Image (tube, rainbow, N blue to C red):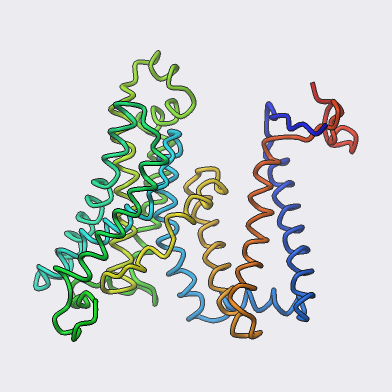
Length: 362
């Protein structure tokens, strides 16, 4: 019989070692798949890196993909710290984009700094508004937030479709269901070849790191995540803290929506979320909910996506094959997170003990 025993303590060295093994195994397994396609794995991997960082344009495209992923991962990770499983990043991004677009379309003549600040505030308000319902239901009646946040994603998407095909449909599009492009004042300026969203994202990393490590509110969030009973004993207002934290989580995700419509698309469209809300869940967990680590992992994920798109063209392989390569790498890396926290035993014998890397299982 195979048993998985939770480790009482996970050392930093063990965690790093397991993750490095996982990356090595993922590359080896993917190499076999590449060989079966008749390609050279070394050339494919080189092209993957080149496609993400090979020149200034590719680097900028990788960063553009990393920005919304980073911001959304920070927002989702904040809720996860409290063991509130916010699966609604997609919907909160969409609502943030919708709220920001309202001001972009209706107040285009405002000065650019004022309009962008207004759109930023509106985007955060939209995300927070969409997170309010699951936050209240969880705090008041212990409702399963996973189901509520997931279902609200579809509601938000259909609201966007309704606006695109109805009230906000561009009359100049000759019947095509399209929302008008933003005016120049509603577009984020570029800094070093990339829209200014990267500055917002970096500031957010620093703010959230300090918030979680050095503020009372951050401490209360961590305590609630560890044990609501302990939080109650410590005198923490659990209901109020759940609602305020989830609203902040939704606001950060809504900010990602504002950055996407203003910095990338320059209009509102159904593809604005690009599945970032779901990918951010993986990024948050792989980063152990740490803001600085989320920054690094977001860039690596964006590089994987950008490089995967490049090798499709460079080697004339179908999109499905590129997706399989990405999935193999993710599969091993995610599996490593399980092995970091658990060890394998066979009929009471610790496998790691036999290999000289652990102790006998109890």
